[in-house]
Amino acid sequence: MLNTTRLSDGLPTLEEAAQYRVVLELPPDQRDGAARALVSRQRREQFPGRRTWEAKDSLLPAPDGLIAVLDAKGDLWRSVPDTGEWREVPRPGPAVRQGGTVSPLVWPEFLERFAPATEPPVEWSRQRTEVMDALRAARAELDRLLTRSTVGPTAETNATSVADADDDDDELLGRAKEWASCLSGVADRLHASVDAAEILHDEVITELARALSDVGLSESRASRGPNGEVSVLLSPADADRLAVMMAVSATLLPMNLGHVGVRPHCWFSGPRHTTMHLTDEGGGLLTTLLRGHLT
Image 1 (cartoon, rainbow, N blue to C red):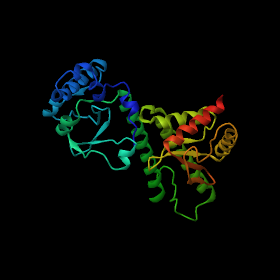
Image 2 (image 1 turned 90 degrees about the vertical axis):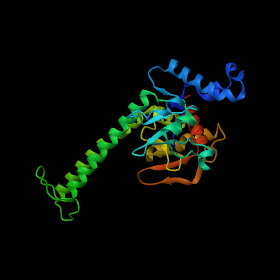
Image 3 (image 1 turned 45 degrees about the vertical axis):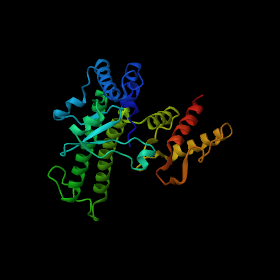
Image 4 (image 1 turned 45 degrees about the horizontal axis):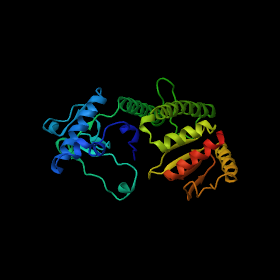
């Protein structure tokens, strides 16, 4: 789930405009329309490089190539491919957990109910494109490796299928090294694209990832888990270092796994990594703990 705080930062919103004196002095039945018109004008003046659409623009089709907009409240809406509909991207919170989201709407209905709508920042589109390109490259590399491993020898390498149990040892090890090199390169590009896409991140994940890096836990990753939780992947060495940090901090702060929002059944240790899942509050507290070790 996306936290749109960074996308909507500084963007005039309907809630703000509704409190302006020039709006409150109007009869109640005129305030909403006046507030929306005011927001539209402010957005065009403050962000001239980003297009803004009003309710009156609902008579026109959605612009070609437009994939997302921020509505009057600053919430993100995405186009649903090949349907002509737009869906709200939910923010984390009680409304989402209770299923309180708006059904997809066609462009005219969306503008009539939620205008003005404004394009996201250019950086968002660029960073998103870089992530998508990295994913496509990863998929292409995986397809290439899998194809070579299932169709038998190739003209270039005369490599046999990875499923062959009677492979020559040197050939088997050579193929394993090739795969490791290729997949490492793919993983590095994916990590780089994600790390550079700061505006796509929500604040909790961004700050925690920066704190992990600042204290030298360089082999660790912070991300959103499949259920919206804060997920921290730690190498064995980083897990040991973090355990020491938390033990030291326990003498200074009333902080332990429970205090940082770790659910006891979601601390997984394995031979290659340890994964911990936290609440958003826990992610913030863990960030505080890590930064405390810098000082």
